[in-house]
Structure formats: C-alpha cells, structure tokens
Image (cartoon, rainbow, N blue to C red; front, side, top):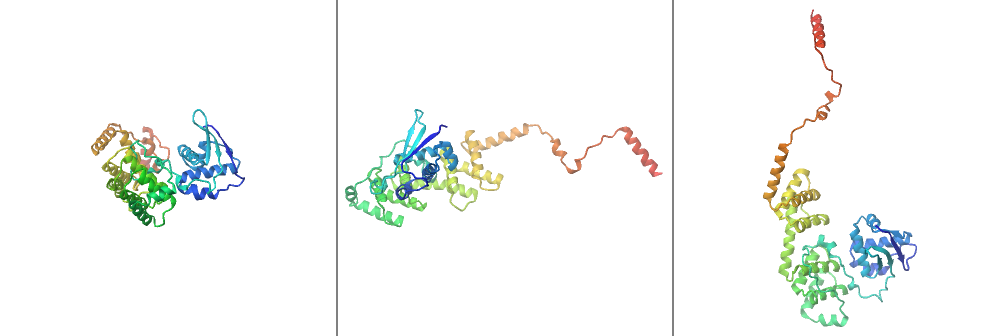
Length: 361
C-alpha cells in the first residue's frame, strides 16, 4: 500500500475541530466518516504527514474500503482534496478550509452517499440498478410555492408529530425531494417517517437512505412498504424465537440475518434449523457459530431441509467408514499408569512362587 502525502490549509498545532464542522457537516455524516476526518485532523496536528489507508484503517479498527468511502465522501463535501495516481490510488490528501456558515450553501445539501454502509439498519435490500433522480436544493421561492399544496402541508404536519419537533430546513428539503423527485405519495412519506422513528432513527440522512432504498426496490405505495418491512421483521422475529431472545437484534446480529436472507437466500426454516443446532452445540445464541453453519450449507448448495438431511446422512456414513484408532497416550494418562511398567519372565514367576511356598511353611 503506497504512502499518502498530507497537505493542509489553516490547521494549527493543536487538534481543533471547527464549529462549522460540528454544526453543519457532522450531524448528517456517517459516524465512521466523522472518525476518519477527525483522525486526519489529529495526524496534521501531530505532524504525522506520512500515512496509508491501511494505517488509518488499523488505527480506527475499520476496513480499508470504509476509509476510502469516507475520504470520497468528504471530497464530495469539499472538505478534502484528493490526488490519485494512474492506478486510482490516493497519493495526497489536502484538508481545505471550512466555509463559514454564511457563505456555505444550505446544510440540507449534505447527503449520505453510501447507502450500502447503512444496509444493516434498513429493512429492505437494494436489487435494482436504476438510480433515483439526484437530489437538488429547492429555493425559497420554490419552497413557498410547493408548501402551499394541501397534501404537502398535511404531510409536514404529520412528520412534525412523528419527529416531535418543528421541521428544520433540511427536513423540508427532504420532504419536497420525496414528493417532487421520488414521487412518493403523502401516505408513503408518512409511513417512511413512522417506520424510521419507530427504530429511533430521526436523522434526515438515515431517512433519506431508506427512501432511496425503497425507490430502487420499486416500493411506491404504503402497502408495498408495509409488506416489505413486515416481511423483513418476520425474519428477525423467527431468529429471535429460535434463539430465545426477547429483544430486538443488535447491529451486528442484523447484519448476519441480512446476509442469511439476502446473500444466502435461505428461507426461514433453514435459518431456524441452524439456530437450533447452534443452541444444542454451544448452549447460547451464537450468531457467529450459526453463520458458519449456514455458510457451509450455502457452499454445499443446500436449498431445503431435505438437503440438510442428506448432508447429515453422508456425514454419518463417513464417520462409520473410518477405522477406530485407540489413543495409547490417552489410555496411559491415567494416574495409575504414570510409572514404568515391568515385564515379568518365567524365571521371575518361579522365584515368586518359591518365596510364597517358603513363607507358607
């Protein structure tokens, strides 16, 4: 991995986080992206001007792909300037001066571009390659015109109730985007917010990511959205029941379930079977162990429980055909067998018999 040269504009010796970053950029950014940006600030302040993607990933306990995503994200936000070689590897990073709040464009233009990194918290996966219309910024004149629409007024009122706070400019921009560009109905928008708030997710970036996912999936009505979320929640419920859990799956656990459903394409009965076997062997709800079972079945082409029974039968036959070998070392590990064993000859037995006879006399 090549080394990257760092350049900066206006960063002093101490690690200072500008208020503009905290107020305008940080709230809408993915948490891992924020960590990468802060680490870059720290590297500049400590004169650590020769780093690699690998060193950043190791320090933040992240993957190299996640680090690259973060760098590309901040470049799009114009906080970084990246230079790349012919192999498209990053060779230089320049931290640009943050724009003042009065000169920077509206906060609502900050988008979370990488919806893949949030799939662990989204109820529906992306299959379609058709991208929705790009996000635009609505002028105040356009906002005034659109918000005179009774459907939009009512939708905003309901969204305020769900968010339990007045709408911010970024909320209004997002709602108008859902109406104008994604062509979501008022009912679908209200259910979108209802669903996200039910998961304690009120961040506009998260809500937009879910909306984009639904748009790519062709989910254009409230009914379709409810069916999709209920279907996915059913997978969670079945795994919880199999493992005896009375709580919602955690982030890593949802990643596993998403993998089993979306990547392996296993039906619930096979997933539940793997969970049952995990409990029998580990005596605990071990998602990692269950994942190993399901990965093995996936590689062996399992499609139904009949295939699992066939694999079990083949495994049993394979064990029967193997010759049993006595472990001499295991037998000799008994505490009564830890002394050297003596070999007796016929002469030894004759002398022992003679002693016993003489003793009897």
